[in-house]
Length: 193
Image (cartoon, rainbow, N blue to C red; front, side):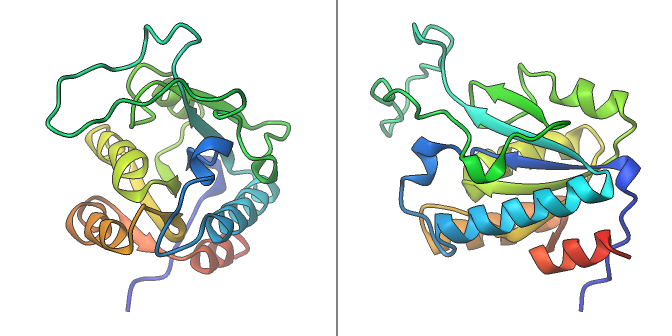
C-alpha cells in the first residue's frame, strides 16, 4: 500500500501536458481522452481552490514550422501541417485566472520554455503531473523534472497513451522510479486535508 500523500499547496504545482484539441482527438488507452480531461480538470479545480500553481502545457511549432524538430529517424515522426486550432487547450482545462501557459516545441515541457524558472521563482519543489501521452510528453517532462530535483506525483488516471501497453510500460519502467504514482482521488483528498 503506497504511503498517503502530504502536499503543501504553496510548494506544489499541477503540470498538465498536451490536453489540446488536436491531441485529444486521437485514440487513447487505457483511459479515454474524456476520462483524462475529466480527471485533469477535476484536479485543476481542486488545485486552484487549494492555492496550487496550475500550469497548462501545449505543443506546436511556429506557423512557419522552422522551430520544429526534424531528426533523421528509423520510424516516421514527421507530422503534416496541423489544422487551425490543433494546439488550442481544451476548454474544460481553462486557462483560468492565475494559470500559467507553456508552449513547447518538443515532447518535454522543460527544454526551451520558462517552466523551470516559473516553478523555482514560486518556491515549488513538487509537481503533480497529468496529460497525454504518458510515454512521450508526460514521461519526457518527468525525466527532466527528476534531473532538476523536483518531487513528482504522476496521476495515473489523468494520463493516457496510444495503447494500454505503452501507458503501463512507462509507469512500470520509468515513472515509478522517478516519482510516485497516484490517482486523482488520492491527490484531491491530499489537497483537502
